[in-house]
Image 1 (cartoon, rainbow, N blue to C red):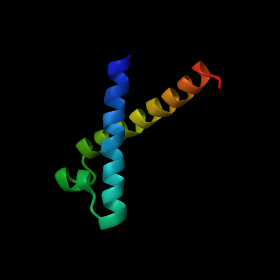
Image 2: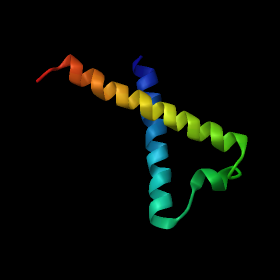
Image 3: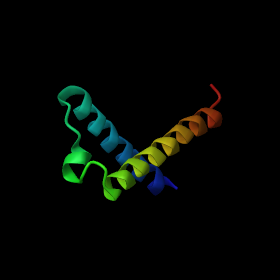
Length: 68
């Protein structure tokens, strides 16, 4: 499971960097590498979204494990 968590974290970081680029420079890296509404870009956005949900579950898992 640790490997899945690390992969999820990497994709979440990539998504955060992309959102930072959009916010600061109005530049969408995913849309520029792949076409804006292409299937590949939708897959990448979906993977980043699922990885974000995995990271949210990890946050609550660690809180539940250590109740302090």
